[in-house]
Amino acid sequence: MPIIGFSLSGIDAKKFDIRADKAININSTPRITEIKEVTLPNLKKKALSMDFEFLTTYDPKIGEIKVNGNLLLLAEKNEPVLAQWKKNKSIPQDVSVEVLNHLFKKCLLKSTNVADDLQLPPPLQFPLIKPKAKEEQPSYVG
Image 1 (tube, rainbow, N blue to C red):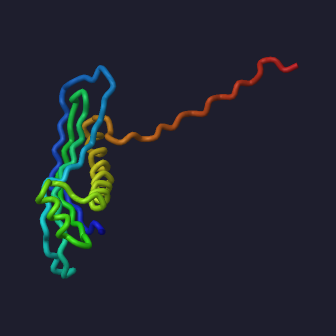
Image 2: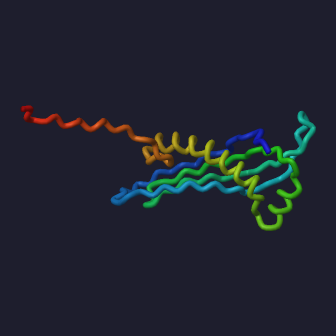
Image 3: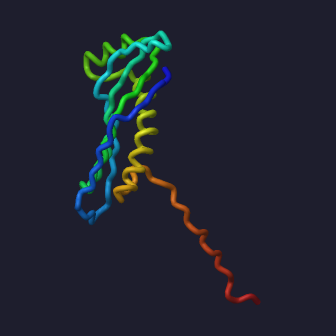
């Protein structure tokens, strides 16, 4: 089930004038908002078009970043996915894992750049390089 298309339709980011006097918790949540079947004339196949929202929030509420877009999924069978979506607004786990991993990869990168522009903490934790501790030399050699 390859994802054959990904596009962004909007980015809405806000920084609030609130000082954080405690640890900042960052939460990123992807959400599928709509699924429909589309015909791809060049491939002569039908694919699933999924609209999504990817929301990054901060606690305390110092800002938020919302990324909206669409992705195209070429599923083996569209009907089970569409039926489950129409029934309870969810998608099968095998499809969900692939879609959510793709959304996290693409949208966290975009949110990280936007957070940097707004001087908000990044939604990804970057590794920090620390200098090696100096080995203590004996002060007396005898």
